[in-house]
Length: 321
Image (cartoon, rainbow, N blue to C red; front, side, top):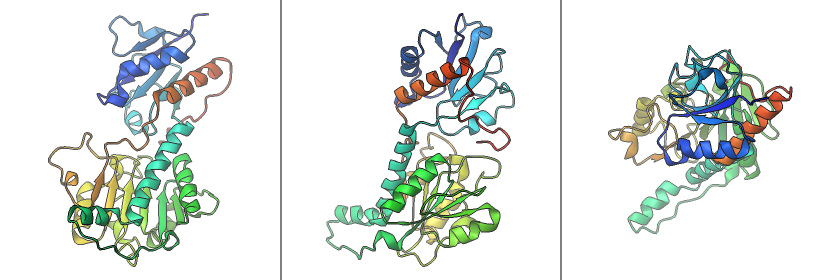
């Protein structure tokens, strides 16, 4: 029996997302299945049974009437969920250890950076000042993780093992060993009040759009040993109100931020976030996962699916994640 074609659609010019690189990887692991890059004028849409995508434009998948599953190549599915013409087939999110490990690396790196006063120390180096400040222990700092899915739970566990007090908040109840867990709107204020460093790994949904705003920042621990609370956002750009982040940095409501994601990407050249002294900025690379790991994951999912097994990590479209 002829295997259905896998169409690869990637809207990115970044080196780590070059479409040809992904096509090569999929061809290596898909066992002879035809792999095509979209757009392809010579492709019969009826041949396509599977699509592996990253940030497709609305409508780009609508023509594939025989599509059986869509595989999102990154963690966030908000771009797909915004497409009203998206075929009504299972939407599978990436869940590979490599992605989880890389996100945890990013979170731990930036928590430690702010905990160990790296912004101050690097400024001291530039000014040739030998003036170390008191360094508090990790046990004196509470890291609050918003979003306790696979990524958030793993990061929270590693931070706890490093000695931090760790709290977590999610929309529905979750349990993570050694982590004080909060959930729902009724418990978010208590979670925020105890938090010195806020780490956001939430999915972007209508409920979380713009959740990182002044109202949230003012509820963070005002007695933090850091001097003022810190925000780390490696979730989605739409979670944050960037104007309010900047104003909160300017007036001391926030002491510093690490941002990996932005409302508009690439970040516009005229954004103050580029040059603000309290901002650590990275180009949406917190959890860039190796193409080999993801392509193998997709190929294995398709093989199991065609053998009669259910797809794993299917997005609940009603919840948006």
